[in-house]
Image (cartoon, rainbow, N blue to C red; front, side, top):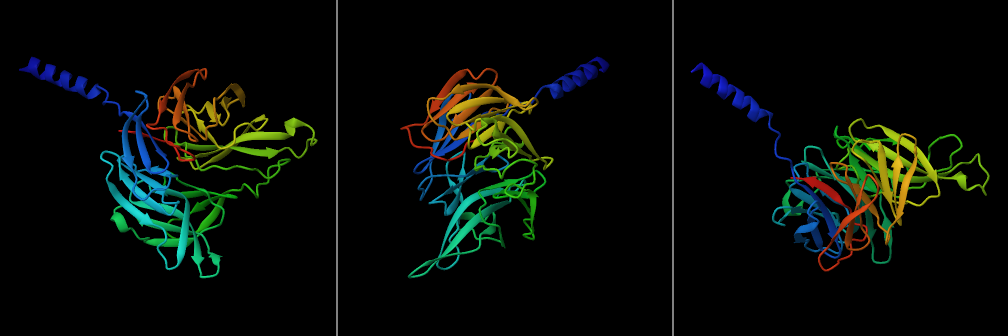
Length: 359
């Protein structure tokens, strides 16, 4: 009896020590006019294709925390549609023209960490018979369980020129525009979290950045290339014109600026390696950046322009996508090309985003 008990106890300990089955990694992308694709990225194949109703081209994609639903900005950026990633069913819809005589445009939304609320940055315009009137931008808050005719449960005025919303792990909402703002989603209070247009870095001009590509799914950090000039250098000195990486840690809510090269060759998106020692950015070239030195370690030419850069959870593969119908795959170690995924019938991804999920 004692021997049986000991054997049973040891077997139980051994079973508990076994690693849980690893979740499979997928990539979710959209393409014009109305397609959402779920890609088995390690198998290099499209596993599922869904049709988005009333779509004219998906843009922002936000994944629910449980990985089951993709919320897609579409319908000329005037609607947010929730798509079940198992069967393609529409489970949520918020049409943003929810006030009389308005035409409303969305350029950024995100979801709360518990998956219960969606935060949408709306740009409304009032339509008259003879003119249009630009109204104050607003933050509209929707419940994700509101079904197919979702209406906002709260709304607050917002600053202009915002193009990206980021929800930190704490639940705080951040917005990137002329400055980086922190928004209280319950009161609407807006604070400057990190000045951009109004920064006071010594000997640096006002910066320029255009970032609406999320890059934090596999590393917990948002990053974007940012350009500026050294005002203490002569205008004919090319070292004057600098490229940096602006980053925001979703866990600590800390910002950082890393200056890594001159010659601005990457414009829109970058991604940190999960170990946060290197980063990658792409446009017409793909570059690998040492974050500790900091400096550009390697660059390769791409066969066409790509808009978004992303990375695998294990940090071994870097992906570039957008603009056409292919996802190109490279080694993070040496930027060697590893393969590609072609979307069926070659639809145009344009500026739609890449999201990485695990399920």
